[in-house]
Image (cartoon, rainbow, N blue to C red; front, side, top):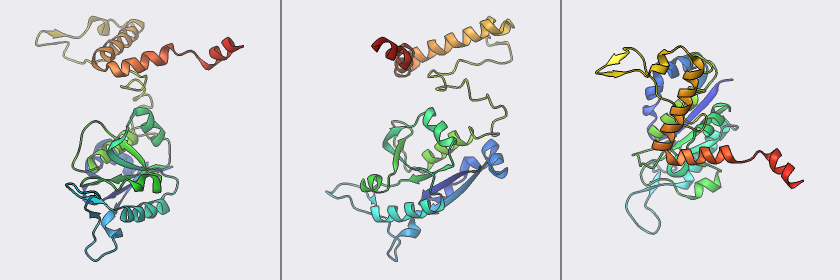
Length: 245
């Protein structure tokens, strides 16, 4: 099954961008995923191809019109009715690796890229659009965020990464940051590779990596560590049920 990526944008020339090189490009050439861009301006009704208007209630900037957005989304859903429509916006739910895995396991994704002050709010409920944020930052448009979302999905598609297990121990997959990596030279500017990694003892190496993942997560991402610890101490549903009986 080919993963179908459809981008709704005012700047289709920004694609495939970095997805046109390396693993992502090779995967596209092999038919593992497809890319289609749709120009939002083509769905404007007037001769000037107007896609935005001033914000209701006043204020700076311009807002993408709901009627134009609805037309382009309806068009995209006609092309790929089973693909979720996602709008890249700082007001959205933070993107997680778990959500990326869900998307990568599906038929594809339609990504709506905003510009100016953003979208008319009515489009989200009116067309069932999922709002997603890549972080607590503001970009000039949704296109760079869309590229990031697609890259995260494409690398998880079957056969894209060299080994099927390549992504299993990465950051966020087990609720932790990934452990640190080292390679040659063994000595660099007085800094050495940890002795355990040169020991050949796979059990000790695995234990060290797990420990370092926990240490780094606790110090660098206390929010992530808190969620991880909460998940670990939560009793299984079976245990809860047994206690009730």
